[in-house]
Image (cartoon, rainbow over all chains, first blue to last red; front, side, top):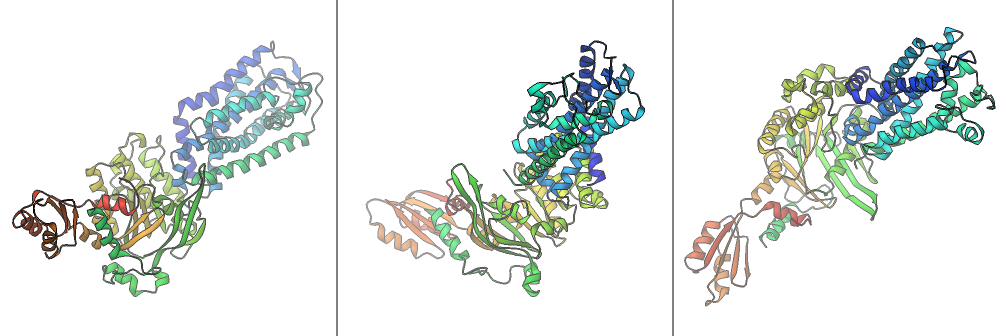
Length: 251
Length: 345
């Protein structure tokens, strides 16, 4: 991975105002929307209140969408032949992936920070500052697996619409990953195997420690959540590497 | 007809005589080649392809884009890869750069695998389809690729050399085709490669931009780089390459000094209609007896004479032979080339 390359990439992403609206302002708006949908949200939940629960969920969603869409730009780049240009330098496919993931994580960190800042200003509460810190750090770092997802999907589809497909998929994953609304019953059983379930569960772990948001939901063990995240990280990494390798060949 | 003749003449000069040996290819190609010939062959070869095949799977079944190419390029050579679209030029170049692996056969660049040579900065390329990021500025683009090569100290030199310093702050999307091509050339020069591969470097440029581009290239070639460029412009091969490899349907059709190719353009075709009331046989004999006539063909009463001595043929036809409707044309080598490579114009 190369710092200068990452810096230039980052400058590029910051200039793309449209994408920034999508990755930073949308999660903020969604927090405001969902946060007020459930009454005041001031009720206690785990080690904090409901507003913290919604804030952590939306920050996770925002960070994941940010990494998905930023990393998905690798697809557009590859369509423009930039991947081939980079393939003529000593940087290996894994280095290309790492640089993208790094840029995506920086934008994800900003996106999650915006949601957390708004949350703290509008009544999200936790019993300990460490709950805030751990929740934030997990949201940012965990979102890296969706960078791999975005890159993999984007490059496999080989078209400009790939980013839309990848981001659209995120809405689906978020819904089935117990991120937007607390699921129950069969839906929840299915949700345990979807890519955002482990990630969102870990982001909310400091608050809920695996407890379900709905009354009848069983408590998850941390290992189930970690296993979910790890398994999907592995699958997405394979997808991304395979897609990057394929993209260097001419079409 | 004339085009077919031209092809046969051309093939006669260049017909392959066993692997790597060429009939009619002498050792006095130029100083660079003599240098190459004086050093041991193994170390002199900048690029070596042996029995290279590449097949793709398509909806219509397997497609062989490269059907067995053997090629050796000595250090310091400037060589044109001439062929129509779809001849397999870009696929072959991709394999030389390690962007795709051959289905079978081996490729070495300075004795290494293509990828190892790329990582060592020994080979670099201006790719036809290798693109640029439209939302970066020219300088950012150069900086990004320079960082990956660890060649930041060469940024200014290279931008100066390719005449893009004045464009430094411009967005790539605002650059003309020629300017973008110069930028890609700058990127290719960053690692200071010993072998430079250019895939249709002037595609989409107007005449002025094309000349300017080759002017820059000429200066660069003086530094003793080995240059291989693909083109479908005959003129570019003639103006710039010492050696031309003619490629079609994924194979090397001919390989030899470009001067031989240039000699071909000297021939003209004189055609005229012979008078109908006289026997044509005598006229044909008279025409064939002219110096430097390579062929005489008759179709009905229309006779075509090929060769450099077009004036003599014309004089004879209009005078003694009382022919009418005289026409003198320079044979289109492009058309000859199309025939040779099996492409319909």
